[in-house]
Image (cartoon, rainbow, N blue to C red; front, side, top):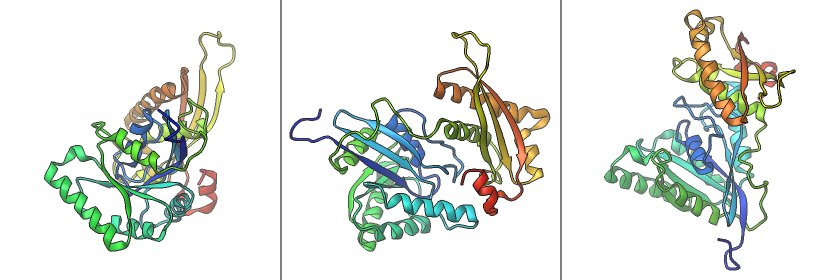
Length: 309
């Protein structure tokens, strides 16, 4: 508990790392509810989703950034700019490195960028420790320490965690909050995210649409929620929220993949997304989904703006 000897702390932390390094899963484990979209497809997080961890002695606001990567499209470049501008504004940076993968060029690329940011404390978080034995984990911890020495990064902490197995997640929260500045809570108690509901709903639909889809689709999929309106004439104890959303893909040929044989795939997407949306909003939902083609939207500045990037 907070005592005169331990002042209340509050601030922002962000997790960085290669795509699919376990950043969103860790965010969700720390907050204790599903706020960031998680998927086994790399490059699924596009919005800065903030998860808020409330503790008796601190409030930790997690800013989830897209994975930093060598950009190949205009969207890729915008995502990278978003990452760098986020790094400049947070109090702590957590660098996520999966325990089951040797450090590669992608990790080094990010570490070099981090080395340029001098003032912000950096924590190396070794994720997915449930996938390796203790020998492999020890090797990874040594490799990360060496990488820091080589690039002149002084790790404030190196923390092994398994968000899936809930191992050391609380310890990670303890160590990160110690690095935050002293201050009052930034958000009201009970808030778990400040992401507008419409964007979170779009993310949940996108996540459902990505599940089990072939590899060519992750980047090509964007979701825009056109409207969310309570159904008129419903009894007060049986409300229904009508949600109309468009799933955008880049090419006509992708339409069949998303819709599936006789619409079966889209139906499954709708059912899955609806369950998550109802859990998020706490109200029954009627979800109306349409699949539309926005030709090559990732390379077109006008379309990118329209789709919220």
